[in-house]
Length: 317
Image 1 (cartoon, helix red, strand yellow):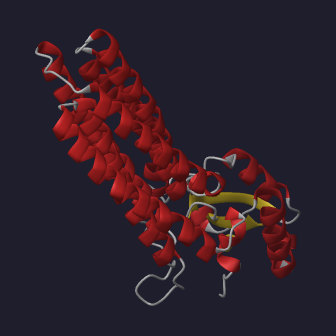
Image 2: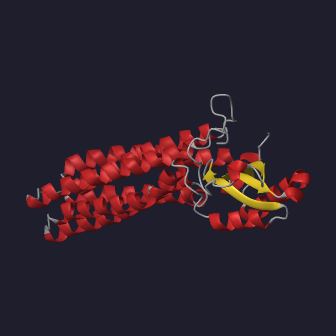
Image 3: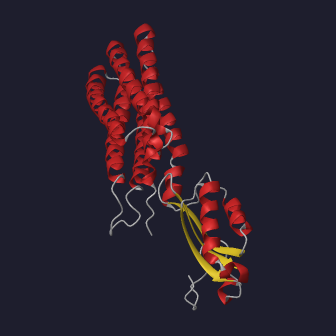
């Protein structure tokens, strides 16, 4: 069955190559920035600056992963990947949130160690480099802002950059306080603040890609309403073995067994067309696999509404 629905790539309001150029530009900006921050952090003794650099480095990696994922996601389905490659973007988002959690945990630990014994920090270097960092982070966030609303992959990226920009503001504030009042504890304290923020961000967002990869129901669709809509179609007696899931971020799918009454069975092509039309127009479900059964079929009597029953000996899965 040809299920090519334009692959939903128009949803970013950007043609793919223009989006790619934006992401590529952001990669280069972040790479140069990370280098400057690491050198500046080592030179000035500022952990907050190195924290920001690590964060930026993880950003650059996430940009590279997101960039590669965008390119791979456009490949058509083939014998090896019969569902196509769109899910790679969800995998990329999961990898990016996972690295954010690791970076956050590491920075929290390092910051705590430094709070106990704050080392001297050169405030000027910190303020200047963090200022440059803020500019690059703002640029990257701006480049990905329009793209992030409709892609979990780019959203992971955008949040990375937004948290970076805020971290840079905090580092500038810390450097200024060191310059004015020699408040050394501010640097590790800001590092811990950045770390906790990164952790909160990643942990609250990681559920979305995990849910998709676990074949969870699409978050924006009310499963009970879908079932009610299917049951309401004339000729349909009941529905069971319902699977609602997402092939990729913007492609909800439905598999289910539809039980038809005698009247429905006699014109099941018309019932099927009506079901498909209703699923697409009311719920945006354009990929549905419907298996039809007669109401007096023995497998229908004790069938479960969701998922599959235990392996049955009648061959009905």
